[in-house]
Length: 232
Image (cartoon, rainbow, N blue to C red; front, side, top):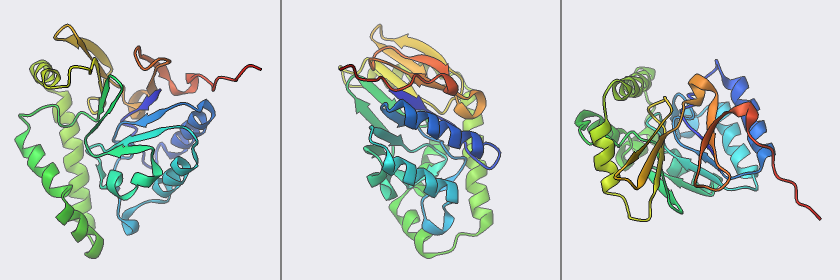
């Protein structure tokens, strides 16, 4: 499994992101995009970029399992483009004993953000964005709000929130992997649940990899292991 989070792709790192996709294709492994892959992605045809359309085409071509979870910088992607992925979710996905999420909903005390998220990601807002042209000022406001949310989360001590969050998970979950916080860390809670924060590819160009979906390690994207060749 290869897990990528927080690429925040824009024009400044688009070329490098395309190289990452080439590397992932050659790996032929399960790939999970854990949110905030683009700096802003509103899945409405007239608002999507050429690169976002190319990315969807790339996902459709892959023979391996491709998972997708919306980040706080993505809007309606899991709903609009669900057929491009093996699975897609707006919030989380459980794969065997691993709970995968972006991480923006870990902190239950972020009331203003939760209200903002509920409004802008609602079905009503999605419908409005499809039929009414969205002024560039509103799009910029959404982008600024998501960036401020990232900085706010990273600046807070959330040990108690992680402990509370892991205590609510199904008993079979022994690993939680999320992005959003940008800095890699790993810590065990309640002596049974390991929480891994994925490094932000947009900052470090690093990803998480695992050979057994149990133990994970951080590698630079250029060091992603190649596909195993069959013998015989």
